[in-house]
Amino acid sequence: MPEEMKPVMGKNFIHDFIDEDIAQGGQYAGMQVHTRFPPEPNGYLHIGHCKALIIDFGTAEKYGGICNLRMDDTNPSKEDVEFVEAIQEDIHWLGFDWGDRFFYASDYFDQMYEYAVELIEKGLAYVCELSPEEFKAHRGDVGIPATSPYRDRPIEESLDLFARMKAGEFPNGAMTLRAKIDLASGNFNMRDPVIYRINHAHHHRQGDKWCIYPMYDFAHPIEDALEGITHSLCSLEFEDHRPLYDWVAEHVSIPYHKPRQIEFARLGINYTVMSKRKLRQLVEEGRVAGWDDPRMPTLCGLRRRGYTPAAIRDFSERNGVTKAASTVEFGFLEHCLREDLNRTANRVMAVLRPIRLTITNYPEGQSELFEVENIPGDAAAGTRTVSFSRDLWVEAEDFLETPVPKYKRLYPGGPECRLKGAYLITCTGCVKDAQGNVTEILATYDPDSRGGDPSDGRKVKGATLHWVDAATALDAEVRLYDNLFSDEAPDAGDKDFLECLNPNSLEVLTGCKVEAGLSSPRPEDRFQFMRQGYFCADSKDSAPGHLVFNRAVSLKDSFKL
Image 1 (cartoon, helix red, strand yellow):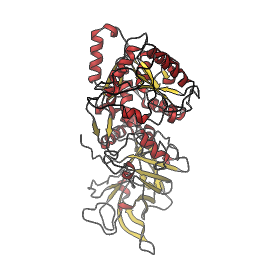
Image 2 (tube, helix red, strand yellow; image 1 turned 135 degrees about the vertical axis):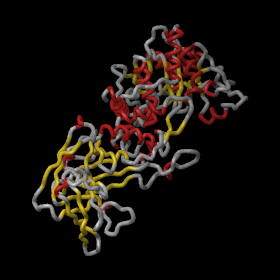
Image 3 (spheres, helix red, strand yellow; image 1 turned 180 degrees about the vertical axis):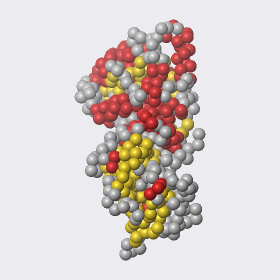
Image 4 (tube, one colour; image 1 turned 30 degrees about the vertical axis):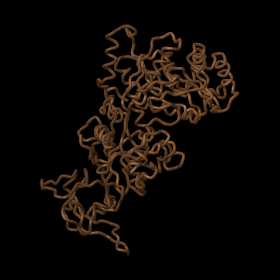
């Protein structure tokens, strides 16, 4: 992404904390701000992740610091190399780079195991044999401490059992390793939390080396400390976990100062689900055409639909960074895209529901070329050439045999209309088939109105219409997208989000007609189809001879700032 298109992250409460740390000196004296973005590779990044991504990378960028990319691969059941590669691609697409600071949580499994042994040796962890059901029964309640019959297990016994857990002697769920903190804590995350569990699953990097895996709350502070992270920025649901984060960092012997965890509110968008589990369900049940279905809130889906990195970064920045949870209108994301594409997208003509228009007084066999602007008012965007002849394609909705009041497009005896950049025409009639359906519109043109302006300066009362020359037009398939869900909050409360799916979220139009210049568009090229919206060529299905365009967003902007 060009530097001039990258939004600069505005000051926020996270930066206030960082400024305070720098001013106080101490362990932060002369520090380089060092953040990390730690996604779990069990799915594709979505627009919700984008907020955290931009905060992590953007904060490091703002302070001249560095940001690590770390795959949180501590749960092998759903993780895969496919997701690792997709996450990297999406981050690069947004314009961020981690250089040589790419890590995996699994890089530290040996060290984490040794730190867990260290806690056992210090009397700060023990092996517990409560089943998941028994664990819940012993959890206690507000004002009622939790209990564990294994809390006072001898250190040597816990060390032996933990080593045997690692050796694979026990089945899933038979044992856990718990930190010994405070069974009466008002913060339930501190009531001797589980820090290791048994999971006999193949790991995408480690293979079958491990059958015990660290819990996120144990692994994360260790990873941050080992990598030299100064500020661990995470979403608000981890606020209650911060005491545990600090406890782990303080009680394992990592030769580094303690990272500071700061939480911010997650991003919510209406008509959308952000749960990776639910998005996975949509994919696995075939309710969408993959993670990159243009209706999905995934970054690869938005990219395929026609969204730009600049629009997504702008959207994230303008939403701000706060502690207060909120739901943003999907219309605002669309608004940010329109603003970007209005500046950058070339204008072209495409007829989505075509009907033939014959200019009866235009010489048969003759054609001419018009030079038109790609982006009005932007000379640097250049021009393109479009052909014009007697036979054209126009939108079927631009003709009514019997007009309704205030209809200013084509109808017999109606007003002059302007063909964009070409000539003025007047409708004289139409041709129908045996069933009475209009198959052709007839019109005459004013030869002295080349360019769309009459030579005598008369006022044109009809509309300006887009068109495509029938002699050079290309056939195309056009996909019109709407919200994937018809419910504003599809996963709120007890709703079944699948019942909220919008049956009209995709409309496929075939037989559309586009300018000849669109014969080989690149997937990253976006266009404004005049009077229709902003479109891009589909990155999977479009090819020369089989053009497929996705509508990224309509022209109409109903969002109010």
